[in-house]
Length: 243
Image (tube, rainbow, N blue to C red; front, side, top):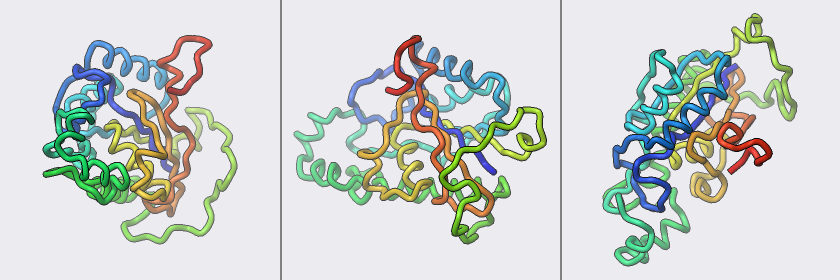
């Protein structure tokens, strides 16, 4: 079994505006480091076998905070979507420059590319390649393996094995640190949701925690959603654990 933990980098020095900056390689702000440290505290004592990060500075810095000195693997397939000539623009500026293209992108961001950049399907292709290689390396499925007809844990919840038990040791845990758009597209691929719906169906807050489970024999689209966008570690007592 593979538990794939998924998080987005913390807040960056460009803040929370609506600027599209997929390829802007900016560092974390002080707030972003605080968010990463809060997630690290949340995961303290939880065994994580591997940490894999996008190579972009904001994701890699978040991963290094979470790793606490352990090695971090870097995979270029986890880079954020390339917005091409829309990089650094807000939606009002995009509407002024490319109103028809923006309307098509809003309707179907899977098939509509930003000018000179990527579309959702481009990112989905590299995400799927990443998941195929990850599942193979973790012994979950060989490339091209058929998906089982029924999950061993369909519709139910597992008991929690003790961290030092043989059952826990057999359960692999990989933490992936990437980006808002890429992570939502990864969720679509893993849960077999149409890519064009990634902006409508999923929310991915900074330093939120999601978990997708793969059973032996599952392919990249065979994940089970266990936890989605939990931000309890970023909330004050009494606040809801979602964004």
